[in-house]
Amino acid sequence: MTRRHLTIVAVVLLLGAWGFLPEFTITMLNYIGLYALVALGLVLLTGVGGMTSFGQAAFVGLGAYATAWFCTAPAGAALAGLAPGSALLPWIGLVVGLVLSAAVAWFLGSVTLRLSGHYLPLGTIAWGLSLYFLFGNLEFLGGHTGMAGLPALSVGGVTLSSVRELGLVTWTVLLLTLWALSNLLDSREGRAIRSLKTGRVMAESMGVDTARYRIKVFVLAALLASLSGWMYAHLQRFVNPTPFNLSIGIEYLFMAVVGGAGHLWGAVLGAAIITLMKQYLQDILPSLLGASGNFEVVVFGLLMLLVLQRFSDGLWPSLALRVNRYLKPSPAATSQAVRSLAERTLPEKGSVVLAASAVSKKFGGLLANNNVNLDVRAGEVHALIGPNGAGKSTFFNMISGVDDPSSGEVKLLGKGMNGQPSRAFAAGGLGRTFQHVRLLGTRSVLDNVALGAHQRGHRGWLASMLRLDRAEEAALMAEARRQIERCGLGAHLHEAAGSLALGQQRVVEIARALAGQPSVLLLDEPAAGLRHLEKQALAKLLTQLRAEGLAILVVEHDMEFVMNIADRITVLEFGQVIAHGSPAVVQADPAVLAAYLGGAEGALTP
Ligand code: ADP
Ligand code: MG
Image (tube, rainbow, N blue to C red; front, side, top):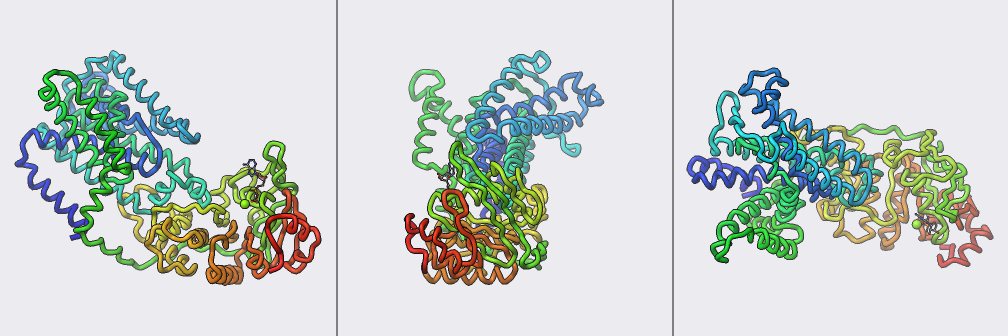
């Protein structure tokens, strides 16, 4: 039995038992389904995307109030141009609720998400509080008493008046959402989403517009909350502000975190645990303590602390680990006829691909780069060397869009790039690695490298959710695999990138850069941490890439490596170019010898 089989069996069992389960169980399942839908959005937002929202309950409220107003207020029906009581009104309410939620989320996201730090959580708290008080104080939304008399939903002429019928819809929506979101995470777009939590600088260098992805994830989470609110309103047939206040928003976050914020099914588990626990504690505590009061809140809080202390990743991972022992691994995706990806035509050998003219960078009073001129040509390896603190990494950042020069100009394939973000450099054909390795450590080598090919695919979120992206995905995966094998890591395709030796992780970064099919490759200390044989293999790879016409710029401390491979060398000291030329010329330069004899770099000759 594989995991997929188990899921199917569970769904079929649930469906089969649906008609026979007691009313109370069905009601609980219904609430669990509704809460899980909200928690699912939070799993995506918090666990996967690394953003925290305390305000999801307010989005639920928006969905609930939108449908309540259209269905019960005469003005609502009039605005929709329908007769009061029309069966279409809930659908108008649904659409308006979703549109409003998306608009609010987009606005909140674009205000707070471009800033780093705690702006989003604070923004969602402010939003959660203000919407709650707004619901309570608006006369036309019924104030604190709320609005009653919502109709039952009717789908295709069938009225869903009982909890049992409505619950079927809730769970169908939930299961479809789980399917769509797991498809999304298992796609090119999903790889970009997974990079948001810890790898934003890296992802930008792979061509991902991370600010945009963050806003889109936030909007998606808000849409799921709003959808849940819509169904909630038609389950209760009544809305008031209480279920949409900030403390419920925090409870939703609890569900995601306790269940396992990084796992979609964790949302369902978390929603189930918290819903059942609250119900149970409410019943049993007063009789146990012989006094009435909201003791469940206290006990609940303590239990939460315990769970979080014991299972910091939530309960789902430990549960899955236990169950997985009895399951067969899912068969690997069958390789389809692989479509080929768009190929970039490389610039002619010898032409200048990347050029920095008179580039300077000031950090306060420190001139980290002073009037640096350097170009990299197609079909050559250009090495940038210099003692520690000479300004090599600073220069690297400026010619790759991570940082802007204070003065001077950077051109990529003849195009002025000043002021452009690093994803524009990626789009222009620049691939790079980082001095401090930036990989998604828990993801496989294959996944990490496939992210490098991000900009060679085009399928969007909806296509990914509906699995219409499979041909493109197969092509991206085939490309990633090809680059990994070419770099000599074919044996480690499916291992977590973080479990490889540091030197191998550097090679994974090279494969990732190559997957973007760059015209120019920037390598920041690629040989650091490699063993002798690995260095030889790397030198061979770079020689081969040079022969293919790539322009390569390396920053490297290993002089033997540099002298063997470089066609030209530029030497920096205190931010200034002190020498430039072939290895033989640079090695004989008195200024270079002085800089290196005075520095801690050791001998310059191999
Ligand atoms: P290298 O990579 O050659 O070792 P760097 O480019 O990292 O050198 O650093 C060059 C100089 O600029 C160093 O003196 C460093 O302290 C300084 N520097 C680098 N980045 C910053 C920064 N963000 N703010 C202030 N000073 C910096
Ligand atoms: Mg450096």
